[in-house]
View (cartoon, rainbow, N blue to C red):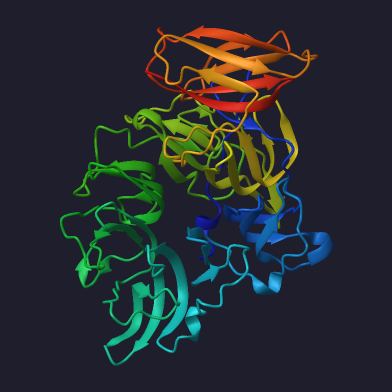
Length: 497
């Protein structure tokens, strides 16, 4: 699909370690992508340290007017010319499946090998005589590699009676239409799906009917695609770009939508009860403002969203103000719908392509090395201290602290900096070994889960120990950074019990 859905998100920024503002991310200026057009929709870190990028991208000096849907950049963001554009596919969402990667295209889904090249074991869906693609949507990958794909596509399964336009369509892990499933259809296009823990899916559609029954534009289906009639929303207009389910059955919906038959009383972030009613314990009228970014007559756009700490959520979108406070594309909203102090005034820069001004971020993820990546459609990144105008479409940040990040235990390597005991409930000791007498300011910096600086302890000698009392701190997770001359030397986690 080619609409506002491609250009949403705006992104985050942060102060340096010794600043007093409450930002948990610091810009890594050693990473810079070298292409200037047009956008990145999704990224995937590969095992060799490179990054697979999916979107619409061009290196003018080597690609003239041609765009690639996938490219690979080296660990510093540099161009890798050996990656062949003719054996690649993508442009949309990337999803890992074992050592393979699924990639959404404008209409269907392809499967890639771990090096980003096309996996020929998964056919082009349009080569199946029972299927013909039309309007692409979203997709979900099951553990066995089979696919649920949405949109509005033609089926020609005359033997089983599935002929015409369908919205929820199942495929095997070879890319062929799954003839054991009951495919589902409605009156519009299903663009978004979000899996739930019980096997159901939240869906967004442009239509008013699904399987012959009236639905709001957001509805819920069972695992087999049949309609769950116990939920009904009254959303009648707009687009929903992202869902965030909660364990108790409530869910957030983000995008640009209203409960009228047109763009009146537009909402951008709402929380719903399990039955589809509006959750009135949340501020469902948060004011998001595009600021200096021109464009849509409907104003700011919100998406994606993901969980943050203490029931709050991280919200990205095309906006520069939230409740009249400068956030420039990323903010943290608490569980009541109030904007918090995190990410105050930082973010990405705008740029003009073919007469249109863009300034958005499509997503954010953490890797296994304690770094985070954000990506989207922008030039420049300002973390509050460093304004790197050479950032392009993908930016690497130090020190993410995502509550949802799960890492497997690893064998402890010899590290020049250590913290013990950990977990701690009293005094905690930081040991350090800088190898030589520091010629620049060096600190042990401790921050809480939302980026507030707790203490900055100076490392005055080449080796030593520093002690901090944790008894007055709230229980929870803290980040510990060892820095010298403003550079991050090592990142640790400290748990206070």
